[in-house]
Image 1 (cartoon, helix red, strand yellow):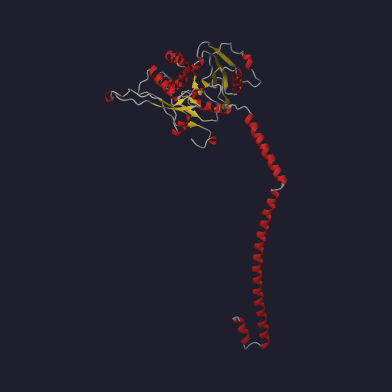
Image 2 (cartoon, helix red, strand yellow; image 1 turned 90 degrees about the vertical axis):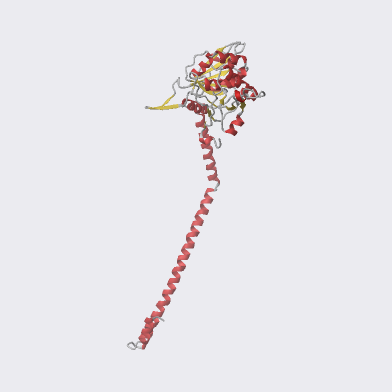
Length: 375
């Protein structure tokens, strides 16, 4: 009993009847307040449960709507349309653009590159090669080094509906033109891409590699890096009777490049080079005679020439590897590593390179970040 109820019950100033009525009313009000508080708590709990049920029902209804056949069908149609649109964009011609003060512009003729390839024995292979690369916008011309008894095809034989560049032939019967880097044909571009006929690249990858070469035109920029090991020379005062003056060069393939994360030789099966440097190599009688006597040294000769004899004998910068999707077999892989090593020995000896001069190593590469996960 509260203090107020006790006061009303025992207060002598009030009548007993009035005290009873007041006590009854206060007691009833107290129980009613307690009941109202319980009902309010119960209503709150019921409201919380109702809210959770509504959320669960909404989620269940959303799942049912998303998993209907019509929704799945619309999703499949949308994904198919997106794939078709992506294929359409990929099939469009890629325009190599550069930026100047006026904004983006297309490459001029001299800023593009020339493809130089040795003619294969099969005319079908040559036709497929020209048809595949003549549509690339960055290609200004395709030069075919022809060294067969039969005359080369006419220019009209390689005109397609989507051809962007002309095709020129250099006839050199009896001359190993496939082992020469320079050409007697007039070259209007700053860069030349030496390419094997069996190598397959997309126009987009060629455009990307060409942009890399334009950032450093004095270097060899290519797709087939290899590794070499220089000979270990022994000073004359420390040699014994059984010691040799120097051990030979060693040549290593693409697996050693991946394992050591280094490379030093860029094979001419797919390499960008400066036009003037190639013409200088063609004017060298020592290099020309060596390649004519030993044609297999063609695969490593350009790297040696670029490293020591280009730019007035100072050599060019280290090569740059452009890692892009590429397919096809190259001729250099059919030659033994020992033969490549002996060619390196012969080149350094015939070009009179001192033991202090060494081919430069490189560890960097140009890749698209989305196309590569590992080195």
